[in-house]
Length: 163
Picture 1 (spheres, rainbow, N blue to C red):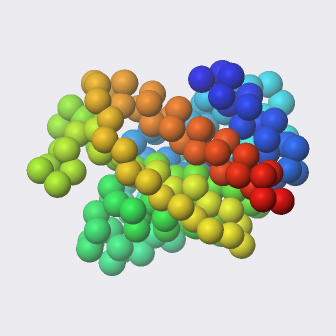
Picture 2 (picture 1 turned 30 degrees about the vertical axis):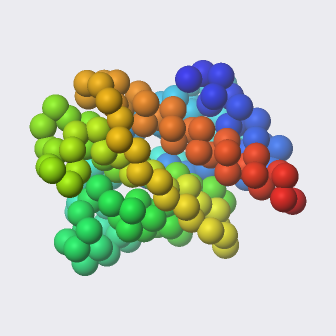
């Protein structure tokens, strides 16, 4: 994880960008991985831990209708979380994660291990992706941190190639 967080930091720094995170099922694990890197204050602006639906609404501006219609673990919700992190911070890059880490809480449509991610750029596109992860609660959360960071690296590497 350390190497990936360092890579993300170097990419953000090289582009002169700041990152904000909006986390639910990871409970701040992404921010923790990032702040393990010395000097991360140069590229990590802030992290929102929005575990409850109400906090997603209050802190990130996720619409209640979105959560009611699609659920907290959905493409629409993580998109709004990422966009809200950009609106409520000085960051130009955001990532969001919401999922079901288990061992309970899964349904037939959204079994344990279902995790939605979104990555976005201020004044740019927000992309979202769903993963079905295997393992216990700690393993699902750890995999989610890695996927979230890899998504930022991929986003910025693609930005470099098309810039």
